[in-house]
Length: 214
Image 1: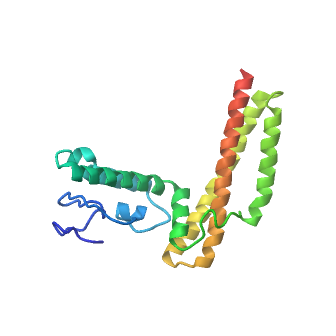
Image 2: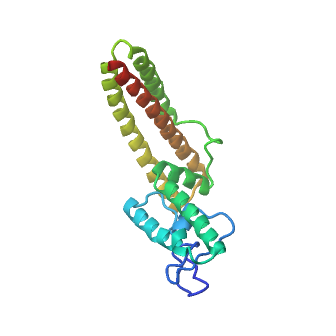
Image 3: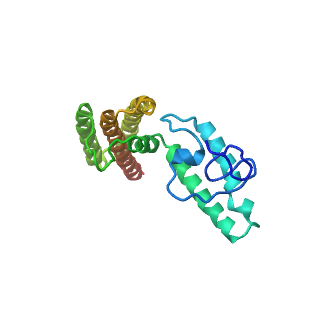
């Protein structure tokens, strides 16, 4: 961790000092982990991350520097935007994992589009289930609404399993990076993205069924 150039206290973030409350204009791109002043990690304590957010928001918020002049006000606004963007990424397990895969030298979403081979049969079954549910809305809307709720619960369980697998794998990669091992992790994240899309579609089916049942 670097020191503040004004008071020499260890910086809470490259964007602000918790000791003298000086704000810094940083050129170049910071990782979300850098912004929060924490080491890269696959798993983060959400309550600790939220507490850290509130501490840094107090240091950087434009209202806190409202009387300090236009230039410092602009830095405060920029740093607050950086902080909020970093928080949105870090608090989302899938987004955080995706960022780490690329940070560690793995493929991006566009470079690796495949899903795990073992997952493809489930995808075919789920696609078939979604089509069947859509076809049954007019005839059995109440039943479709109930079945869709059960289907979404099944998807949630599989998503949770995949996320745990991804985070377990990434913890090992952060400790000892192996670029060849990152493509399978990206494939699991692609499966998570598929589940998220299937969840959205299932929710639309549920809403349509509930409206048809009225």
